[in-house]
Amino acid sequence: MSSIKPYKISVPDNKLENLATRLSVASFPDELDEAAWEYGAPLADIKRLTNYWKEGFNWKKQEEKLNELPHFHTDISIDGFGSLDIHFLHQKSAVKGAIPLLFVHGWPGSFIEVTKILAILTQGGSDSPAFHVVAPSLPNFGFSEGPRRKGFGLEKYSEACHKVMLALGYNEYVTQGGDWGFFITRFIGLLYPQHCKASHINMVRSNPPTFSSNPLLALEHAITPYSERDKKGLARSQWFLREGSGYREEQSTKPQTLGYALHDSPVALLAWIYEKLHDWTDSYPWTDDEILTWISIYWFSRAGPAASVRIYYESAHSPGPSRERASAWIPDVKLGLAHFSAELTVVPKTWGRTLGPVVYESDNDKGGHFSAWERPDVISGDLKKMFGMGGGAFGVVKGKEGYEKVNARL
Image (cartoon, rainbow, N blue to C red; front, side):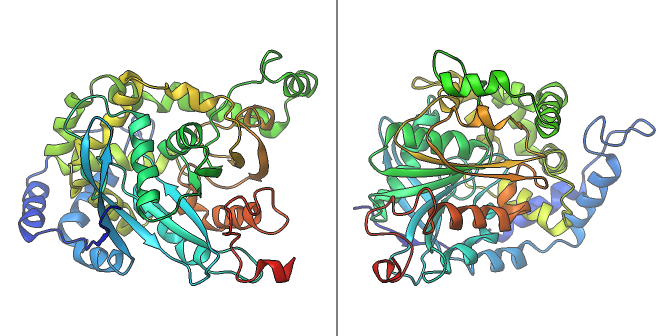
C-alpha cells in the first residue's frame, strides 16, 4: 500500500516576490472602443485584477484558509510512467457507512471546486447519505507532480485517480465530475467497472440516439419535438463551438507554444483563464479574491501553469480510447446527469440517456460550467438524492450505503 502523508500548501517567499516583480513590470495592449467581452477579457478588468494581485491580494491568507482542509499526498505508480506524487483532499465523514466519492476537476479548475460541497456531503447518516470525499489535483495540475514523457492521455489520468482510491482502501467507490472530470470519470467506469459503481456528471457530452445503438431512445427522439429548453440548449452549444472554443484548438495542437506565455507572464495566465471564468458561468458574481485564488493555484502549481494544458494534446494524440468514447454507452456503471442551462454543451435528455444506465437526472435553469462552485446546492443535492434511500444508486457500494444504521431504517 502507498504511504499516505499529510500535505501543507506552502508557497515560498521567493516565488511570491518573483510574482510581484513580474506584475510590477506588466504592460498591456490597447483595446478597441466598446469591445467589451466580444474580443476577449476586457482591458479594464485585467488592469484592475493585475493591480489587486500586486497590491491587495493576500495569497498567504488564502493559503491558510486552504490549509484548514485535510490535504494529503502519496506516490502513485502509473504503468509506463513510473511513480508520480499526487496531492489530494480527503475529507472523511464521521458516519461509518459513508460512501467513498471521487471528485475529479477539469481545466481551468482545480481541487478547490470541491470545497463548497465538502461539509454538505460529509454530513448525514440519518435522513440523508454521507460521503467520504476524495478530490485529487490531477497530474500536471495544482500540487501534483506531472509526467516527464509524452503520451499521458485520459487512460493514464483515470489510472492515477483510480489508484488514489485504492491507496486509500476504497476498493469500491462512486464518482462525480465535469469538464475533464466528465471524461476521466467516464473512462474510470469503462476501465474499472468492478470498482467504480456509479457516476454523477455535470457536463453532459453526448450524441443523438441512433436506431442501431439505442432504438427506443432513437424512436422517442424522432417523434418528440424539441422543447424550448432543448432549442436554447442547442443554441448555447453552437455558440460555444463558434465563439468560445478557439482555446481548445490551440491547447490540443501546440500546447508548448502557448505554454511560454502562461509560464512567463502572470497577466497572460490571468487573461487566459479569467475569460473562461466569465464566459462559462451563468452570471456568477465572482469576487476578485475568488478569481485570483483560482489563478494563483495555477501560477504556483508544482508542474507550472503550462503543464495543465497538455491534457488537451494528450487526449487527442495518445494511444488508448479516444475522448469520443466517453460520449458513448458505458454499461454496468449507474449514471446520474445534472443538466445546467449555461453549460458549454446543453443537449436534449434523450441524448444524455445514450451514455449509460441513467438512474437520476436533474434539470436546472440556473448554473454553468463550474457547477460545484456556482451551484453547490444542486451538486450536493443530486448526490444525496441519487445515492440516498429510494434513489437509483442506493446501496451500490457494498456495506457503504451512507447511513449509520441502514437496516434499522429499512
